[in-house]
Amino acid sequence: MTQEPPRLDLLLALADDELILGHRHSEWTGWVPHLEEDLAFSSIAQDEMAHARLLYGLALESLGEGWDEDRLALGREPRQYRNAILCERPNRDWGYSLARQFLYDTADDVRTRTLLGSSWKELTEILTLVRMEEAYHLEHARTWFRRLAGGPVAAREHLAAGLEATIGEALAIFEPLPSEMELVTSGDMPMPSSGMLAAWLGGVGEELETVSLDYVLERHTQMGEMVPTASGEMASEAPTLSVPGVERVGGRWVHRGEFAGAGGRRGHHSEDFTALWDDLTGLYRAYPGATW
Amino acid sequence: MEVWDVLGKRTAGDEWSVVGAVKAPDVEMALLLARETHFRHKEGVAYAVRRRGDTGDGDGALVVGEWPPETLGGVTDRSYRRQEAYAGVGAKLKRVAADLAARGLRIERSRPPDPHGTSGDGTKGKPS
Image 1 (tube, each protein chain N blue to C red):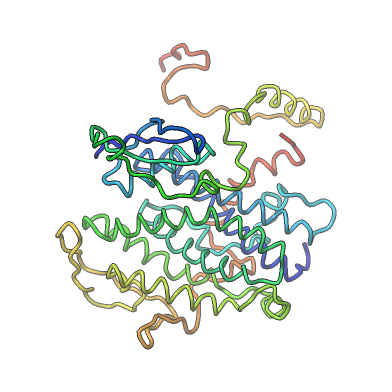
Image 2 (cartoon, each protein chain N blue to C red; image 1 turned 90 degrees about the vertical axis):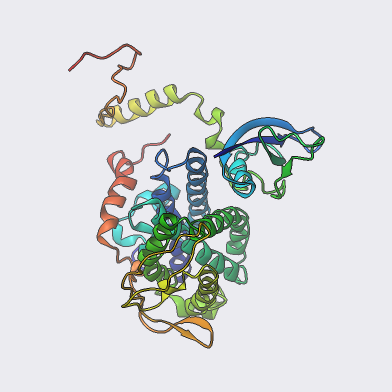
């Protein structure tokens, strides 16, 4: 894996996002505040890992002898993982994790729907399957999003804090891939990442506006608007925010400019990735070649 | 929080039968959690919830989930979640340990602390 072919660039971005976020989701198993939801979130974690597995299987076609699914998932050095930094951040609290799931799965929906138009038949076949299960995740994410946004105040504030903490790095899910020009030219990507980002940001901006949480997209330096929740309580002061490159133009949220938390697609990760990688790959590295 | 009985059909021709229950604040969340907790392993082709104690007329109180049978329970390989995937775990562990021992490696990660203060054979551990 010294020089990655363009298709591997795309596959690893897709698969590593699913693997790493699936790993973070799985860390909630046994700890979710509600037993039924514990099972639900664990199932979503397993789905994400199953999707990564399908994509790694396709990636093996671009690799030489000696590679297999396990080695791809667990046998790479940290700099060889191409997940978005958003996916590797620790879970913090339940509001953070739900906010991240909402932003990630809405972004993944735009990304996989777009890629169904790819000229790469094997990829579109996998994504057709993946999207059948991602529909579960979207329903889960949107149900919780509406519910927490509707109050009571503590729930809304947890969600808002989670959105504030994730929205900037969520944009970088659409950070351009190193081989993007080749991928677009070949038709493997029907449009550049910037096009997918515009579609996602426009849609997610509308969803945030529906529940009056679009302020998380704006630069705030003073008191936020007071929004009554479904329980009749009033949300309190909004903190200072800064989401680089996001503006509202002609009634629609658009991205112009730089990303926060970019670099994942080029193998640059946050300080949080090291501990995750150590935990995720520890067994594989301790017992190389062991089979079950 | 209210209790909702979860009902399912293993095949399309079956009658509804109760398969469990979930706690949920309303029917939307009850349906979502019923599907997630009882129908994620290909257990059936249809699912529904009914507020406990709400009998209605016949199936009148039943709220049927809309997820289609083709995708209910997922479409990717999740055989490892089923009980048979764990058959022979002891023998596998012995085989893996023997393979590793032949290469000079040993599984030596210690067991995690027992939160209940009991030893592996179910007897109480020594007081500290």
